[in-house]
Image (cartoon, rainbow, N blue to C red; front, side, top):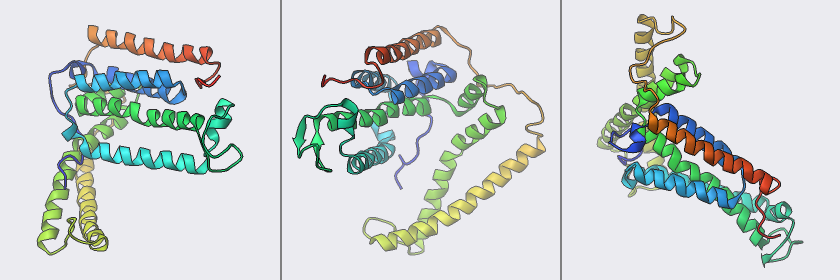
Amino acid sequence: MSKNLFVGYNERDTFMHRLSGSTKLIGFVSLSIIGMVTFDTRFLLGIFLFSIILFWKSQIKLSEISFILKVIIAFAAFNIFLVYVFSPGYGISIYGSHHMILGNPNQFFNLSWEELLYLFNVLLKYTFAVPLALIFLLTTEPSEFAASLNKIGVSYRISYSVEITLRYIPDVQRDYRTISLAQQARGYEISKKANLITRAKGAVQIILPLIFTSLDRIETVSQAMSLRRFGRHNKRTWYMARRFKMADYLAFFVIFLIVIVGVLLFKVNNGRFWNPFN
C-alpha cells in the first residue's frame, strides 16, 4: 500500500500554516462557490493560478499527494469524456455560434471550438479547487479545524466528529497495512503480479477485517465520550482555537476582492458565460 494513500495534516512553518483555520475554511468555501458558479475562462484561470501559487507557498510536496492527484485526474478525465459523449453540441447551444473542428452542427457527434471551451471550463472547475482543498487539509491541524467549524456556527458535536475522523485516518492506514501484511503472509496475493480476480479476492480479505476493526474503535471512542458526558452542554471551549491576526484580515480582504471581481464579471458578461466568439 502506498504511504501516500491518505492526506493529512503536516506541520510546517509557512504563511498558510500560520493562518487561522477559520480563515482558510471561509476562503476555500468562498472561492469554491464563486468558481463553480461562473463560466468565465479568464476568471477560472486566474483563481487556478492563484491556488497554485498558494499551494507552492505552502511547501506541500507532490510526493505527499501523488495518490489523491491520480484519483482526481482520472475522475476529471472520465467526467469530461462523459460530458462530451452525452452532449457533444452543448457548447454550441451555450455560445450561440459554431466554429467546427470536426463534423457539422447537424451531426450528433461533432467537435467545435465552443464545445472545447465549455469542456475546458468544466475542467478548470474541477482543478482550481483541488489545490485549495489540499492546502486546507494539509495546513490545518484537526483540532483547529474543528474549532474553525464551530466558530462559523457548526455544532461542536459535528465539529468534534469531523476532528475525530481526521485524527483516525493514520490509525486506519496503519490497520490496513497490518492486515494487508498478515493476509499476504497467509498466501493472499494482492500485488500487481496477480490477476485482477485474485487481487480482488485479496482486497476483500483486507477490507472486511478493516471494517470490523474500525467499528470496534468507533464503539470504544463512543463509550469513552459517553462516560465523560460529552455533549451535555450547549457550548464548549477549544484548546486549539486561534484568534484572527493581521494576516487573517489581509487574507479576508484578498478573498473579498476575488469574489467581487467574479460577481462583477456576471454583469460584464451579461450572465455566467464569457463568450469570446461574439
